[in-house]
Image 1 (spheres, rainbow, N blue to C red):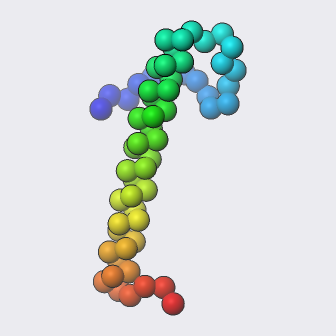
Image 2 (tube, rainbow, N blue to C red):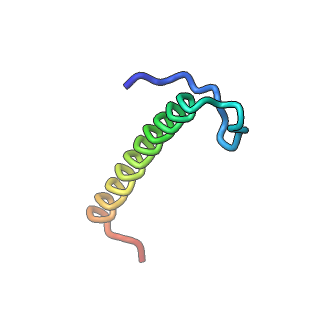
Image 3 (tube, helix red, strand yellow):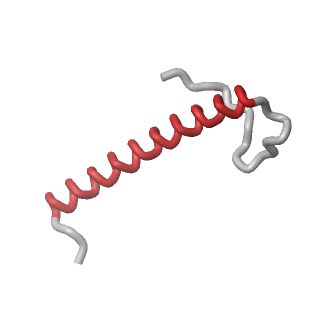
Length: 58
């Protein structure tokens, strides 16, 4: 996956942005959300596996 050039900040003014640019921004953000969710799932899996191997909390 190619890393798009991101030239916006979360919470920035949206007034002067075209429909195309807004749609592109949504696509970039959705891809990033999916990437972060994937990493979160991997970390949760790793913790679960370690707890299974070494015993859980408490």
